[in-house]
Image (cartoon, rainbow, N blue to C red; front, side, top):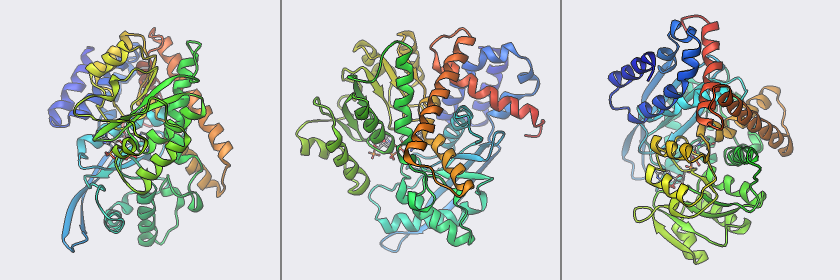
Length: 450
Ligand code: NDP
């Protein structure tokens, strides 16, 4: 490894030895930047790697809230404002018991490069809480969101930091958070959140955007080999926002999705999940808040606990890991390759471990890393901000067309950048370098204090 890169990476470990997923995300990016760093000494001269791996600001706060039994609970809230060289901090809020500073630093770091790739003027940030919405009543979720906003409101704003959803934060939570923000600040400020409801400042296609965008990206990768989505067999993991709309777009394009999962297990539907079955899943997950196991019982197909076997053991042409980080390990990547997988599009953030990424790249599988493949969500968030600024709304067709253009632009940028650095079809290197150069050059232009 290049000496400069190695010293920056070692210092990240020394400073925060427990932040393992952040180290993993940083290493992947730093290693792939080597050709760009060696080609131009200005990045080292301006200490760009030291600066770009350190968040501009990291806020941690207490969230006390009363549960249904009248007992006060305490959770931790965070906002990592990672980099604002290109625009206001932008990135989702995650509610999950595994949320820590390290997890949010990994997500915020990824977001900086992803947002740079979108072609839109957005910096990178991420936030959330170790609150677990599972098993909570609507009223508890509402009270929790209000308490979180009592602190967060002072750190966000349409020109400062614009949160959105992520794991555990969907339309319901954004509604409660936005309502609390309005009440506290007496300010309608629609531009302060994205993922809002379509009737109160949200953009059409925002709920669909990450899943649709991921499939558009895979479609672009397939085109480079004269292939298309039609008739491909697809395994999708997760059954939340990203998984649901990735499945919908696969159906639209004539592909067959044969699996979905949640944190307990996965279903295998060899006939494919059609529109009616998908509508049933959306009701199960978004309204009844049930488990994917119920799909197996309802449609009489196999359900397997993930602890017993992996969904990645299924034979497929396209894999779309869309649940969470590190859900595809080296062994699972090998199974996919042995079963002839042609393309992998990361709907989730960093779902493939580094060894798995290596296995895909060595096997010449088309591999779309999360920061490129799942950038559709934040892209339409950027379009939501643009519509809010104009006090105007675009139609579904207009937003979808813009989303497709953006995904094509991200693909082409990553593809061409990889080619420029002699790494044809390596979208990891292409996306990381392309995302990095724009942010790094902006930081240099803005002086040494940013
Ligand atoms: P949701 O909360 O809507 O869905 C998450 C899904 O992943 C659920 O099915 C959940 O199952 C499953 N899951 C969560 N944790 C685990 C785990 N530890 N092991 C196995 N399965 C798990 O979240 P999203 O669909 O919004 O997000 C999914 C991924 O996509 C995340 O990595 C997120 O960062 C990324 N992403 C999301 C964007 C968005 O616009 N929403 C934008 C870009 C990236 P269960 O119900 O059992 O917890």
